[in-house]
Amino acid sequence: MLRELALHILDIVENSLNAGATRVTIDVNEDTPADRLTIQVADDGRGMDAEMVQRVTDPFFTTRTTRRVGLGIPFLKQATELCNGAFSIESQVGKGTTVTATFQHSHINRMPLGDLPNTILALVVGNSHADFVYRHRLDERSFEFDTRPIKAELGDVPLSEPGVIEYLRREISDSLAQIYGI
Image (cartoon, rainbow, N blue to C red; front, side, top):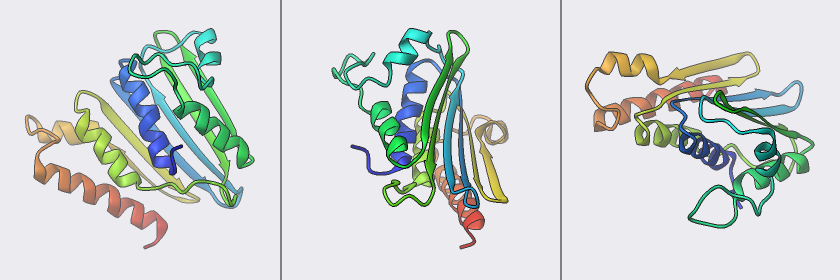
């Protein structure tokens, strides 16, 4: 079982990329007055028909050929339900998929967010063919990280360039630290 929400985000985004997504949006919304944590991952991949959407939460169903079970989505769904939350998948063939997981923010069994800066960094650097938008909101404070203007500014310089990786790491980490007030 995945022990932090950042790893669930990584799993969902890998599914998006495997479905041909070229743009992935990751939204993390921490609404402490409402005691809610919502994570949403939206992509422009192949999408799924209604039957596939129903089957994807079954742990014994997977489209992967390397293993016979797909546990990421079922475990995330179970985690939301154990924390007074909800889970949904909306998808349209040819348009993309949106996965939404909501948790009671203060629930004792809610997994920690985990290392979001390095998760986002790994996705961005390891998948330069895709564009990523990462938005994180904590009550009234928020930030947005979008790879499109960064790629435009860099031109032919790859995101995997060591100096670029360090810049991206600092940018994401510093922005998160600011919204948490640390």
